[in-house]
Image 1 (cartoon, rainbow, N blue to C red):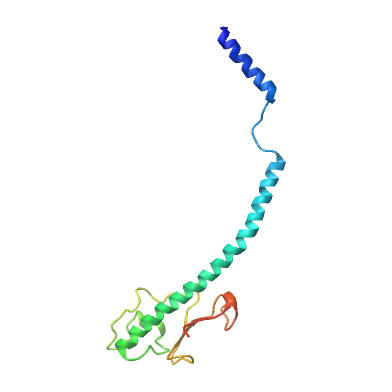
Image 2: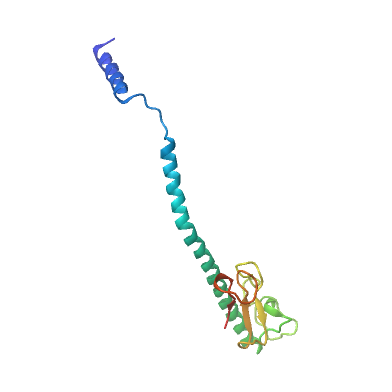
Length: 154
């Protein structure tokens, strides 16, 4: 063995003795500390995230109602009146047989459901304006507060 190889071997052996034989990995305590930190972060962030999701669904419903209002107003400009309750919001995409002045479609697609998967409620004549257009919110029931509140056009 050459002198250089001998010195190199001695250095590796003395380094291993000095630091002890290392085995890769983490101790149980280190893993527990990391898990506690992740749990604390999740407990802090998750409620804030999910409350934002609920707020965004309400904003989507408001934006959809605004879009439907514009389509209904254009329908009225063309025909002279709003769709009847029997025609409903479908009259915005499908020509009613009794409407010779219909210039639609007034929406690119059929009337979307609200963010909770239910149809918007259209009433003509309305109690709060010429027509009422609303969603019952997350709970699907009249009234409510917060995310369960009705989203309306009035």
